[in-house]
Amino acid sequence: MLVLARESRGLTQTEVARAMARISGERVSQAWVSKAEAGRTPLSGLRLAWYAAAVGYPPQVLCEDPQVSGVGIGLVHHRKKAALGATALRRIHAELALARRQVGGLLAEVGGPVRQRFVRIGVSALDTPMDAAQQVRELWDVPSGPVEDMVALIERAGGLVLMRDLRTADLDAVSQWDGDQPPLVLANAMASGDRLRFSLGHEIGHLIMHAQPAATALQEREADQFASELLMPASDIRDELGGRLDLDRLLALKQRWGVSMAALARRAQALAVISDWQYRNLMIEMSTLGYRTKEPGAIPNESPRTLHTLARLLVDQYSAQEAAAAAGLLPDEFITLYLPEDSPVADPTQPAGHSGVHAFDSSLAQLNFGTGRKA
Image 1 (spheres, helix red, strand yellow):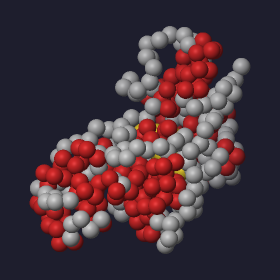
Image 2 (cartoon, rainbow, N blue to C red):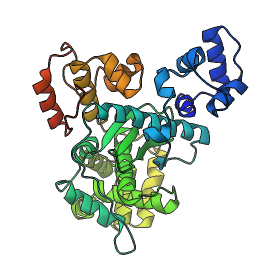
Image 3 (cartoon, rainbow, N blue to C red):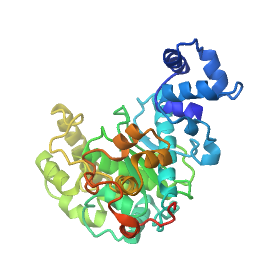
């Protein structure tokens, strides 16, 4: 767990050693940190406390075995740009692993979710990603037309979404589903609303279709095809893309469908509503106007609710300290991550313990959680 904790903070061994030295007033070398992380020298007592302070996690979390805790890096899906470096990708994967530890701790307090609507759907030459997306819309009772809220769609299906500042514009979302816990998507708060909606559809496609992530061009193309059909079903959008498709039309359609103008143009090309030549001209015009970098007509960001509301319920029923301990976080960071002031949850001004056991259980049921809570 030491390496995951350090990498999730974007720290090197040298930086951790220097931080430990500042905290303790003693000399700590990079070589010692390396040995401690490799298990070749014991880490306990004061040195454990110093390491924990350097990386900003409770000491007891650092003593956990990530494989036993089920938070190893494992099989991860991500939608990223080629420019994203290996160091940043390792940090984000470590953040996802620690997020799974946090979520697992919170779910353990309430017995976990009781309903799961994510299913594995295989794809082939006959059963395409578009077919899979149509099945998902049917299984998840998605009405025809635009998807109103992609985050809510994932949460209603039993998945979980966390919005985090991933400190890069080169990756929009990363996800993981090991089968035992709910699918978890870590979404980049830096991404625009329209781009993030498509990225969430892309991640759903990975989670549904790709039990073994491979980060291949084929899997990425399949996930994009899935997202396009999920967000812009051919049977619903084809007629709307017909006629003269110019930038004004694309901007109006962006507001209706909640996806980028570029994604709509690609969809029109894929459905043969416009020619390859028309598509290229649209892209040239968008580039000339700077739209490939920043499009007009911003789409509002969508907000996760499930985990924020669960965190509020646990804090109200017990305390912020107990909820943070369950998540494996220090209280201040727990509040920042899970109870931000603008999170769409119950009124945070209510006093702790106000809900009562019956109301607590009722709220958990509405959130689709069990009541296997601690006594």
